[in-house]
Image (cartoon, rainbow, N blue to C red; front, side, top):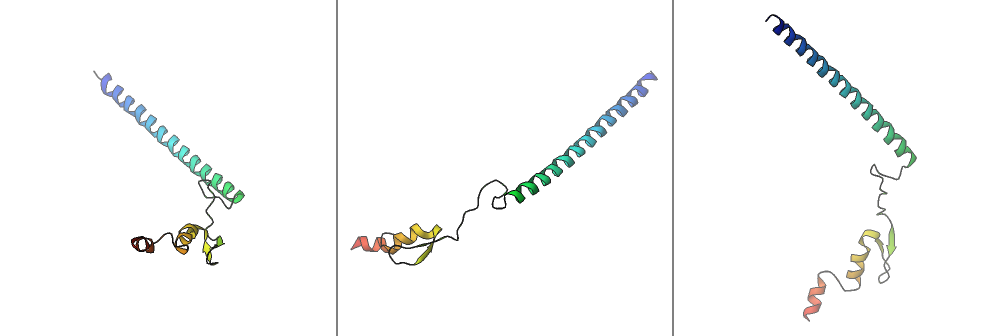
Length: 100
């Protein structure tokens, strides 16, 4: 019977050592992954400065086009709505014109 508590103590010691080694291994793996991620993004962002972190090219919203009807410069993102309003096909006035 004296063998039981000593065996349980050595078993718990072995389990504690296994848990400790697993924690150390996990911490080392986290350190390696964080270091790799930092190095990877630093190298790739320097090589391609016009690409975001997902590899997409940002949209150029500063590009201007000249309206064919009124000759005003219009941003590329607003060109279609401007053209509809400028030529009288869209906007609030459309409902008013259709009543007449």
